[in-house]
Image (tube, rainbow, N blue to C red; front, side):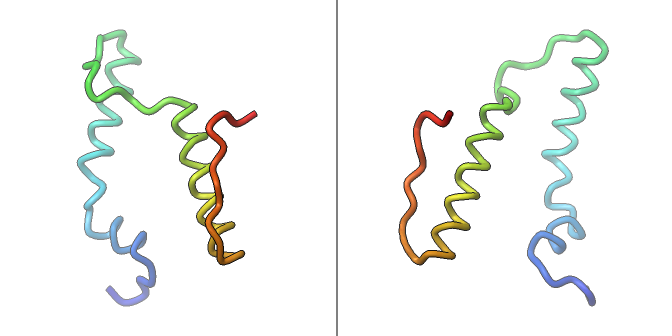
Length: 76
């Protein structure tokens, strides 16, 4: 594992993320082919992505300022 410096790099090298990506691409495949997909678990939405980014931004701000950062429930 020489040259690997982050948990992210190690995660990708060891394949721990392989299963979730297989499920994701199976859903893409089925949607492209016009097939129905299982309702559970529901695929993430754009709004989910925005919420995730708000959390990451708050984590960065909190670390930089050394304080808790509130996340707005209803972003503009």
